[in-house]
Amino acid sequence: SKLKIVDFFVAIVVFSTRFAAQLLAMKSKILRKADELFSKEGVREVSIDDICRALSISKKTFYQYFQQKEDLICDVLTMRADARAREFMRSVCGMGSIELIATSFEQLSKKRNFDAQPRDLADVEKYYPETYAKFMEKKAAVARERFIAGCDIGKAEGVIREDINSDVTLTMFFLLHQSMVDYIKGNNPFVGKKIPFKSMADAYEDIFVRTLLSEKGIKEYMEFKKSKNNS
Image: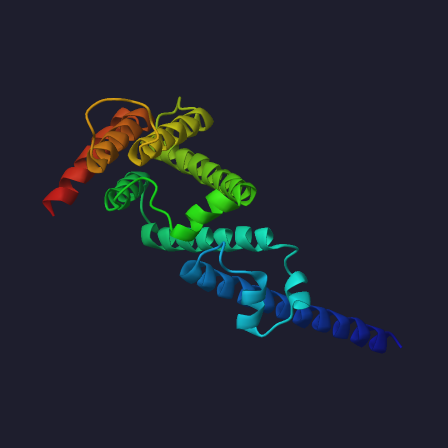
Protein backbone atom coordinates (compact mmCIF):
# COMPACT_ATOMS: atom_id res chain seq x y z
CA SER A 1 0.00 0.00 0.00
CA LYS A 2 1.00 3.66 -0.36
CA LEU A 3 1.23 4.01 3.43
CA LYS A 4 3.76 1.18 3.70
CA ILE A 5 5.85 2.71 0.90
CA VAL A 6 5.88 6.05 2.72
CA ASP A 7 6.85 4.33 5.97
CA PHE A 8 9.66 2.53 4.14
CA PHE A 9 11.14 5.76 2.78
CA VAL A 10 10.74 7.51 6.13
CA ALA A 11 12.67 4.65 7.75
CA ILE A 12 15.44 5.04 5.16
CA VAL A 13 15.69 8.78 5.82
CA VAL A 14 15.80 8.27 9.59
CA PHE A 15 18.47 5.56 9.26
CA SER A 16 20.55 7.70 6.88
CA THR A 17 20.33 10.70 9.20
CA ARG A 18 21.42 8.69 12.23
CA PHE A 19 24.24 7.03 10.27
CA ALA A 20 25.48 10.42 9.04
CA ALA A 21 25.38 11.76 12.60
CA GLN A 22 27.45 8.80 13.81
CA LEU A 23 30.00 9.38 11.06
CA LEU A 24 30.30 13.06 11.96
CA ALA A 25 30.61 12.22 15.65
CA MET A 26 33.49 9.81 15.04
CA LYS A 27 35.27 12.24 12.72
CA SER A 28 34.92 14.94 15.35
CA LYS A 29 36.42 12.61 17.99
CA ILE A 30 39.40 11.88 15.76
CA LEU A 31 39.94 15.58 15.08
CA ARG A 32 39.74 16.55 18.75
CA LYS A 33 42.09 13.78 19.85
CA ALA A 34 44.56 14.59 17.07
CA ASP A 35 44.45 18.26 18.04
CA GLU A 36 45.18 17.33 21.65
CA LEU A 37 48.09 15.05 20.77
CA PHE A 38 49.56 17.43 18.18
CA SER A 39 49.54 20.26 20.71
CA LYS A 40 51.12 18.09 23.41
CA GLU A 41 53.63 15.98 21.46
CA GLY A 42 54.10 17.74 18.11
CA VAL A 43 52.65 17.00 14.69
CA ARG A 44 55.63 15.07 13.40
CA GLU A 45 55.94 12.91 16.52
CA VAL A 46 52.30 11.76 16.59
CA SER A 47 51.49 8.88 14.24
CA ILE A 48 48.19 7.50 13.00
CA ASP A 49 48.81 4.49 15.25
CA ASP A 50 49.10 6.83 18.27
CA ILE A 51 45.76 8.45 17.48
CA CYS A 52 44.02 5.12 16.90
CA ARG A 53 45.46 3.72 20.13
CA ALA A 54 44.31 6.77 22.11
CA LEU A 55 40.76 6.37 20.74
CA SER A 56 40.71 2.55 20.81
CA ILE A 57 39.81 2.38 17.13
CA SER A 58 41.35 0.46 14.24
CA LYS A 59 43.34 2.02 11.42
CA LYS A 60 40.59 0.78 9.10
CA THR A 61 38.15 3.02 10.96
CA PHE A 62 40.59 5.93 10.74
CA TYR A 63 40.95 5.57 6.99
CA GLN A 64 37.18 5.73 6.58
CA TYR A 65 37.49 9.41 7.48
CA PHE A 66 40.98 10.43 6.37
CA GLN A 67 42.96 9.06 3.44
CA GLN A 68 46.28 10.06 4.97
CA LYS A 69 47.81 11.90 7.92
CA GLU A 70 48.21 15.08 5.85
CA ASP A 71 44.42 15.31 5.36
CA LEU A 72 43.93 15.01 9.10
CA ILE A 73 46.50 17.73 9.77
CA CYS A 74 44.81 20.12 7.36
CA ASP A 75 41.39 19.49 8.94
CA VAL A 76 42.80 20.02 12.45
CA LEU A 77 44.31 23.36 11.40
CA THR A 78 41.02 24.36 9.78
CA MET A 79 39.10 23.37 12.93
CA ARG A 80 41.39 25.56 15.04
CA ALA A 81 41.09 28.50 12.67
CA ASP A 82 37.30 28.21 12.64
CA ALA A 83 37.22 28.12 16.45
CA ARG A 84 39.39 31.25 16.70
CA ALA A 85 37.23 32.99 14.10
CA ARG A 86 34.03 32.15 16.01
CA GLU A 87 35.57 33.40 19.26
CA PHE A 88 36.65 36.65 17.58
CA MET A 89 33.25 37.16 15.95
CA ARG A 90 31.54 36.69 19.31
CA SER A 91 33.85 39.27 20.87
CA VAL A 92 33.14 41.89 18.19
CA CYS A 93 29.44 41.15 17.65
CA GLY A 94 27.50 44.41 17.29
CA MET A 95 30.57 46.57 16.67
CA GLY A 96 30.77 49.08 13.83
CA SER A 97 33.71 49.13 11.42
CA ILE A 98 35.75 51.65 13.42
CA GLU A 99 35.49 49.78 16.72
CA LEU A 100 36.15 46.49 14.94
CA ILE A 101 39.40 47.74 13.34
CA ALA A 102 40.55 49.31 16.61
CA THR A 103 39.83 46.11 18.54
CA SER A 104 41.75 44.04 15.98
CA PHE A 105 44.85 46.21 16.34
CA GLU A 106 44.48 46.25 20.12
CA GLN A 107 44.67 42.43 20.06
CA LEU A 108 47.68 42.57 17.73
CA SER A 109 49.53 44.92 20.09
CA LYS A 110 49.17 42.36 22.90
CA LYS A 111 51.22 39.83 20.94
CA ARG A 112 54.99 39.64 21.13
CA ASN A 113 55.40 39.37 17.36
CA PHE A 114 53.47 39.25 14.10
CA ASP A 115 53.89 35.52 13.70
CA ALA A 116 53.04 34.02 17.07
CA GLN A 117 51.97 30.49 16.18
CA PRO A 118 51.97 27.20 18.08
CA ARG A 119 55.03 24.99 17.79
CA ASP A 120 53.07 22.28 15.99
CA LEU A 121 51.96 24.75 13.30
CA ALA A 122 55.59 25.69 12.71
CA ASP A 123 56.32 21.95 12.43
CA VAL A 124 53.61 21.60 9.79
CA GLU A 125 55.24 24.40 7.79
CA LYS A 126 58.63 22.69 8.10
CA TYR A 127 57.81 19.01 7.70
CA TYR A 128 54.53 19.07 5.74
CA PRO A 129 54.98 22.07 3.40
CA GLU A 130 52.29 20.98 0.92
CA THR A 131 49.73 20.57 3.70
CA TYR A 132 50.72 23.93 5.18
CA ALA A 133 50.38 25.60 1.77
CA LYS A 134 46.94 24.02 1.26
CA PHE A 135 45.77 25.24 4.66
CA MET A 136 47.14 28.76 4.12
CA GLU A 137 45.42 28.92 0.74
CA LYS A 138 42.08 28.06 2.35
CA LYS A 139 42.75 30.52 5.16
CA ALA A 140 43.61 33.28 2.67
CA ALA A 141 40.39 32.65 0.72
CA VAL A 142 38.32 33.03 3.89
CA ALA A 143 40.26 36.16 4.89
CA ARG A 144 39.63 37.67 1.46
CA GLU A 145 35.88 37.06 1.72
CA ARG A 146 35.74 38.65 5.17
CA PHE A 147 37.90 41.61 4.19
CA ILE A 148 35.79 42.40 1.11
CA ALA A 149 32.57 42.01 3.11
CA GLY A 150 34.01 44.29 5.80
CA CYS A 151 34.97 46.90 3.20
CA ASP A 152 31.45 46.86 1.78
CA ILE A 153 29.98 47.42 5.25
CA GLY A 154 32.50 50.19 5.98
CA LYS A 155 31.70 51.92 2.68
CA ALA A 156 28.00 51.83 3.56
CA GLU A 157 28.87 53.44 6.90
CA GLY A 158 30.93 56.07 5.10
CA VAL A 159 34.12 55.27 7.01
CA ILE A 160 35.99 53.35 4.27
CA ARG A 161 37.06 54.99 1.03
CA GLU A 162 34.66 54.44 -1.86
CA ASP A 163 37.53 54.28 -4.37
CA ILE A 164 39.45 51.54 -2.55
CA ASN A 165 40.27 48.37 -4.50
CA SER A 166 39.69 45.67 -1.90
CA ASP A 167 41.76 42.96 -3.63
CA VAL A 168 44.76 45.20 -4.28
CA THR A 169 44.64 46.67 -0.78
CA LEU A 170 44.38 43.26 0.88
CA THR A 171 47.35 41.99 -1.14
CA MET A 172 49.40 45.06 -0.16
CA PHE A 173 48.59 44.61 3.52
CA PHE A 174 49.47 40.91 3.32
CA LEU A 175 52.84 41.58 1.69
CA LEU A 176 53.61 44.31 4.21
CA HIS A 177 52.66 42.02 7.07
CA GLN A 178 54.77 39.18 5.68
CA SER A 179 57.77 41.48 5.28
CA MET A 180 57.46 42.50 8.92
CA VAL A 181 57.23 38.84 9.95
CA ASP A 182 60.46 38.13 8.04
CA TYR A 183 62.11 41.17 9.62
CA ILE A 184 61.18 40.09 13.14
CA LYS A 185 62.49 36.58 12.40
CA GLY A 186 65.76 38.03 11.10
CA ASN A 187 65.14 36.80 7.55
CA ASN A 188 64.97 40.26 6.00
CA PRO A 189 68.30 41.58 4.64
CA PHE A 190 67.41 45.20 5.46
CA VAL A 191 70.19 46.75 7.53
CA GLY A 192 69.38 49.55 9.93
CA LYS A 193 68.38 50.35 13.47
CA LYS A 194 66.58 47.44 15.11
CA ILE A 195 62.93 48.36 15.48
CA PRO A 196 60.96 46.84 18.38
CA PHE A 197 57.75 44.97 17.67
CA LYS A 198 55.48 47.55 19.36
CA SER A 199 56.79 50.32 17.10
CA MET A 200 56.26 48.19 14.01
CA ALA A 201 52.72 47.26 15.10
CA ASP A 202 51.88 50.95 15.63
CA ALA A 203 53.29 51.86 12.21
CA TYR A 204 51.35 49.03 10.56
CA GLU A 205 48.14 50.28 12.18
CA ASP A 206 48.81 53.84 10.98
CA ILE A 207 49.43 52.68 7.38
CA PHE A 208 46.34 50.47 7.47
CA VAL A 209 44.07 53.21 8.80
CA ARG A 210 45.31 55.99 6.50
CA THR A 211 45.17 53.74 3.44
CA LEU A 212 41.74 52.22 4.03
CA LEU A 213 39.64 54.81 5.84
CA SER A 214 37.93 57.88 4.46
CA GLU A 215 38.46 61.32 6.03
CA LYS A 216 35.36 60.71 8.11
CA GLY A 217 36.65 57.26 9.06
CA ILE A 218 40.08 58.55 10.12
CA LYS A 219 38.49 61.26 12.25
CA GLU A 220 36.15 58.77 13.95
CA TYR A 221 39.01 56.30 14.44
CA MET A 222 41.23 58.87 16.14
CA GLU A 223 38.36 60.00 18.36
CA PHE A 224 37.56 56.40 19.29
CA LYS A 225 41.18 55.65 20.14
CA LYS A 226 41.41 58.83 22.22
CA SER A 227 38.26 58.01 24.18
CA LYS A 228 39.51 54.46 24.65
CA ASN A 229 42.85 55.64 26.03
CA ASN A 230 41.16 58.10 28.38
CA SER A 231 38.72 55.54 29.77
